[in-house]
Length: 305
Ligand SMILES: NC(=O)c1ccc[n+]([C@@H]2O[C@H](COP(=O)([O-])OP(=O)(O)OC[C@H]3O[C@@H](n4cnc5c(N)ncnc54)[C@H](OP(=O)(O)O)[C@@H]3O)[C@@H](O)[C@H]2O)c1
Image (cartoon, rainbow, N blue to C red):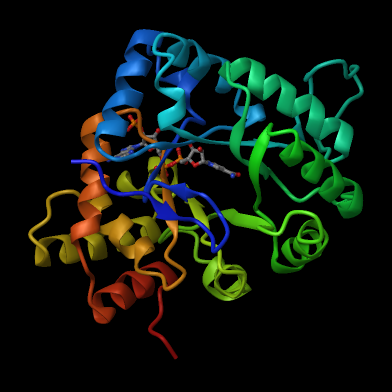
């Protein structure tokens, strides 16, 4: 049964409560038909928002699936990102290093390639993938405003930005695009607690927007513990899962990340539709504060002060 869409920001678009991430799509070994089936099954489950990035090289792969069902595009909200230029990308020579480029020209070039790969003429939400230390916010915000006026991008956001980087771009963008930045896509999981302390979550609340959370399962590592810390978290999740009569630990992980007051939107990374259903089961789980802090304590290795 599809879940209803939810606003990502006060003046932002509606998105699904969970977002399907396609970073790893080229490792999934799915044919375009199989990928179309996966995306359609996600949609039936209410997951209409999909996450891509130029650097994932996922767009052309997904675009081949979309081309098989032209009616599907209008039912999706496509998020993609620009700004990372890895070695060997495009015209760069042998001396090139991985770098960031958030210039207006890089944005336009990357966006055009994204649109072409996906076979669409607009992106719902375009994110700056990582903060570029050489970011010229005035130029970037002006280019964003132009692309919005042209209808190529509906909304903008950022990813992996600290609070100051977010504020600097937000202030500039809001002068021409009142909706401003509609999200900060950041890493958060029981393995990665930094956002609890660095202000990024509260900043989203102050800006009336919701973060998207990546690698909530630590890229799968949380479920295959390889260290004492991983094992501690794993054990705590197991106990809480048993208390809720839930079989899958990832259901508890998603309930744990969704408990944050900023109402975050978790990204899923799985290629497996049964695992998608297991994640969605988190919508029905409400952890007690004591359970939430038990998982926090297992992660930090110490009780709250
Ligand atoms: N903005 C950024 O900088 C950034 C960085 C990283 C990721 N992202 C986005 O976030 C999305 C999710 O990241 P992620 O792939 O690292 O997420 P994740 O959910 O932490 O990890 C997914 C991986 O875990 C595996 N896995 C193993 N056991 C699983 C289980 N029981 N349930 C579910 N998955 C299990 C999956 O394999 P199976 O396919 O076999 O289930 C998949 O390879 C990405 O696709 C991308 O869109 C953004």
